[in-house]
Each structure stands twice: as structure tokens, then as C-alpha cells.
Image (cartoon, rainbow, N blue to C red; front, side, top):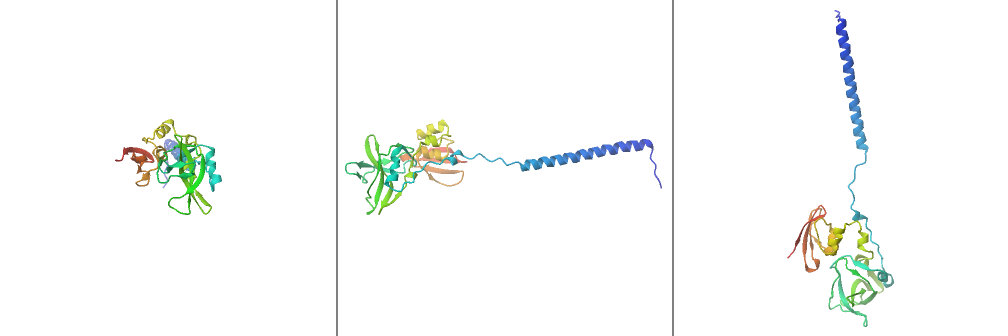
Length: 240
């Protein structure tokens, strides 16, 4: 059985078919375009979080291995790295002796010193061992702080862990003025990170780990408890 269509019907059908082809073609082209854009987005390098500039600070080290190399400390000022972590003693230049029986104090956070000499003195509690001492003056009075030991001609000197030999203001010149203002006033303020807090009030004792934790700071007898969230001080309170 044959079916015949009128010329009018055939004309309408051809128009419909052409329109359908155009719609399908446009849809196909759009899908191809979408997939091409998705592929381009996937090929783009992922944005990396900005790294903390503190990670790029590399303080200069002396690596002293004897008295001669340790005396390089006398050629520029030094700044205390760990506040309240190093005890110093009265020193008698005439007798070349430190008074180890009487503590004079502890070096404060980022305290600036001019080392005048590096010498040895007998250790009061370890026969056969000598203390390596960095000599300096405060208010015109001579003092000595241990920076290593000597035994049988072998030296272990850890001044690189005690002193900066470069101005910390220059090492961390990316910190804003308000941070340095807090450090110089020995204050911990909200938003400071742990390095900045250490510079302000000395080394603390962590009470946990991770981005959110608490640190207790002896702070030379004025104890502080600081809670850090995402690496920034968020709560600061005195510890009785």
C-alpha cells in the first residue's frame, strides 16, 4: 500500500526537519564547547595557598668550633633568640672567673648585647670540663653567659642557637610595624603567630599540637596562656 502526501504537507515536514537538524546541531556544538571548557579548566594549574614568608628566613650562622671562631661573636651586636632561656652570671675580669654560685638573671627576648670576648672557665659541677663563656656588660658591669663546653680540647659551642648575629628587624622586615611594636613592648596581641609571640615574651610550652592549641609562656615570671587558632593568637590571658 502506498501513501501519498500533499505538497503542502511535504513542505511543512521539510521545514520541521531542517529546524530539528539545526537544533540538534546547535545542542551538539554546545556540548562540545562545554566539554572543551571543562578540559581547559582542568588543565589550568591549581592556585596554591601563599606560603608564609617566615619560612624563607634563614639567619646567618657562625658554626664556631673553637675559641677563635667563637670570637667572631665580638664583631657585631647579637640578639637573644630564646628569651628567659639562658642564665648569666657576674664575671670578675681580674680573676678571669665567673661567679656560678650567684645567678645574675636570664637574658630577655631579643635582648641586644655586644659580646666583648669568649673565654673558658672551670665548670663548678663537672670536674675536667670547662664552660665556654661569652662576656658582655650591662649597666657597666661585666657578666658571662655559657655558650658551650670544652673537654680535653674538644669544643661543643651552641651560640648559633642562642644568638642572632643579624638584626631581627631586618630578618623579618615583612612584619608590619604594629607587630614590632608589640614585640618591643613584650606583649602578645591577637593575630600574632608563635614566632612573633616567642620574640615578644620568650619561649613557651605547648599544651597540645595542631593548628588549634594552647601555649604557656613563663614570660620571666609573668606567665601567659595563649590559645592559637589557625596559627594565630586568638585568646591571651595571664596565668596565676
